[in-house]
Image 1 (cartoon, one colour):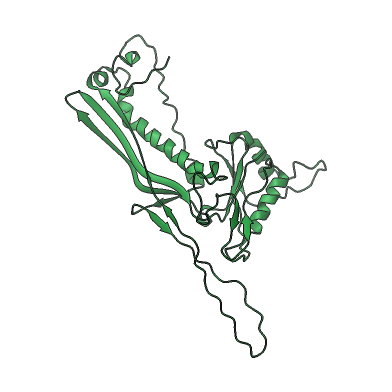
Image 2 (cartoon, rainbow, N blue to C red):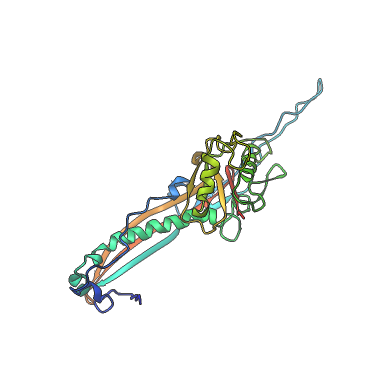
Length: 304
C-alpha cells in the first residue's frame, strides 16, 4: 500500500535505504513534451493585474441624397475585463538521515520532480480554457459569456461560436468551417478567418486523421469523391489533458485568437534548511493564470 508523509523520513521510505531491492520504480519516464504551447499564447504580466478594454470600429457608409448632410457615427466603447495571476506552490521536506542514507538517488531529485509538477500545472491551467469553455462558472470573456457560447455584440445582434453537440464528422467539420467563414466583428461586419488547428481527445485521434488526411471523402460510398474538409490546410493535435472524450475544438492560428497563458512570476525553485529539526526543504512557486478576453477565432463542440 502506498504511503505519504509530510516530512520524508527513513521510516516512510524504507525501500530506499535497504540493499536487497533489485529496482525502485519512481515515475522517471521520458519527459513529456509541452502541449499547451501548441495552441496557447504565452504572455508576461508586469503588474498585479492586467486590464483590458474594448472599442468597436464603424459599420458601412450610409446612402445619402444630393445636398443631404453626411451622417455621423462614432466608435463605441464596450466592456472591460481584469485578469489576475494566481499563486501556486509545492514543497518537499526531507530529513537529513533520509537524504544521506538514500541508496537510489531518488531523494536528490526534489527539484526535478517539482519542475515536473510545475509543468503539469501549466498544462492543467491552459487546457482548462477549453475544458471549461462551455460554462461561465470558471471564467468569462469581456462580453460576460463563456468562451464557446452565443455572444452579444456591442453593435447589436449575437454570434455563436459553438453548435449543438455533434460527433466529429465530415458534416460537423463543414459546419464548423462555416462558423469561421461567417465570423463578424462587434459591429456585425463580416470578418471571416481561416481555422488552422483541430484539437481532439485521444479517443478521436483516428477520426481526425481520417477526415483531415484523406484525399477522398471517407463517408462517400462512391469512389473518387474529393474530401472537402481535408484540403483546407487544417492540422490536428491530440490533447492528453482534455477531460471530455467527445469534445473537439477548432482554432485559428495563435496570432489571431486570444487564448493566453499569463506569467507574472516564472517558476522559482528554492531550498532551505531547518537546522534544529535537521530537515531540508525544497520548494517551487510561481504566479500565473490562463484566461481569454475575446472569443474571436475559436470554435468548440461538446461532441456526442
